[in-house]
Amino acid sequence: MNIGITCYPTYGGSGVVASELGKALALKGHTIHFISYALPFRLNHFIENIVFHEVEMSNYPLFEFPLYSLALASKMVEVVKYEKLDLLHVHYAIPHATSAYLAKQMLKEETDIKVITTLHGTDITLVGLEPSFLPLVKFSIEQSDGVTAVSRFLKEKTLTNYNIEKDIEVIPNFIDTNLFKPCEKTCCTKRIAPKNEKLLVHTSNFRQVKRVADTIRILEKVKKEVPCKLLLIGDGPDRSECERLSRELGLYDDVKFLGKQEGLVEILNAADVFLIPSQSESFGLSALEAMSCGLPVVSSSVGGLPELVAHNECGYIAEIGDIDRMAKYVVDLLTNEKKYKLFSENARNRAVEKFEISKIVPMYEQYYEDILNK
Ligand code: GMT
Image (tube, rainbow, N blue to C red; front, side, top):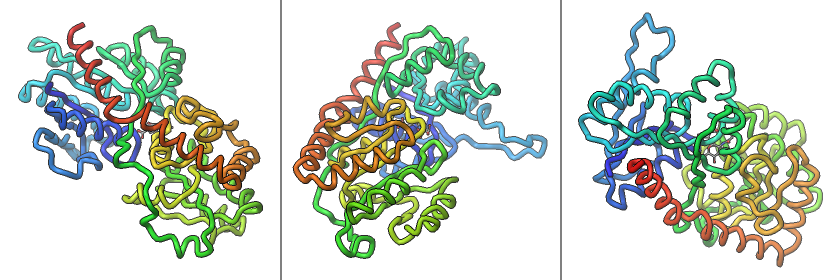
């Protein structure tokens, strides 16, 4: 198939999923055309049947706000027409599903290009609900030829929040378990944990929904029982506030802010427990990456997290903000070697059995076929 993929190209789960899907489809022989304003950051190796089409933006002074959605629609039209695409697969509804709808209308005399929209999270649960976007998101979802959601939770939220009656296919996120796998500690943590302290880890874009401050408060409690440190990977608006909190709690030496990092597999393998106390999380790709490396996860019970983290098997889930309980769970894991080993194995097995890339990519291929033959 000849497939156009649009996604946000920078740091973030939906861009990771779209890029990894594109790469996997290309390796299976499909031709993939990425259409975005920058090269998606995971496309770091040459694959001959992946082409990137950059959406160029004009700086005309009259346009106080960049008209990206429109420029994207024009680029989509050009690529569909000249590269003879079979379908457009857009990730994150705003504005990608709307641009694709516009492109579809512009092309309708020549071809009936099919549009598939994959919903990822805040496009539905947060930004999409703002009055300035809600009608547009609802319309763009309804007009898509096919819609997928990354969890059952997200599907239900979409149907109820937007009062939509439409088939939405749940296709969960996936992981390359040959890449994200348990291995000997290769990264040196002597400076971070000189006394072999246990390591808690969290990765995110440090936005409010992630509740990163909770991870610091969890560390404060766990530290009273087990010597440990916290690794915080990533960056974003809440980072300064978290740095301030760790100083205020006298934990600045115990919380290591590592910023954005490339060597995630090494870092995860150096750590013991993954924390994800989010306010809202439609899937939790970062938790899946950790599970695939054999890390038990302690999470909040929101959104799609209970579909991913099997409670009392490969981790524990607790109410949002229940720091005491989350800390207790972490202590339980770090002080019971037998349980830790079992949960670590369960986490890895669950990633392999339910979310391995080679099992999920055929679900997208089948869905593409279904939509094209509808
Ligand atoms: O919504 C976001 O926070 C951004 C979004 C993204 O584009 O990175 O993340 C969402 O999509 C990921 C990939 O499907 C999911 O793993 C995340 O759970 C989801 N984030 C939220 O729901 C907060």
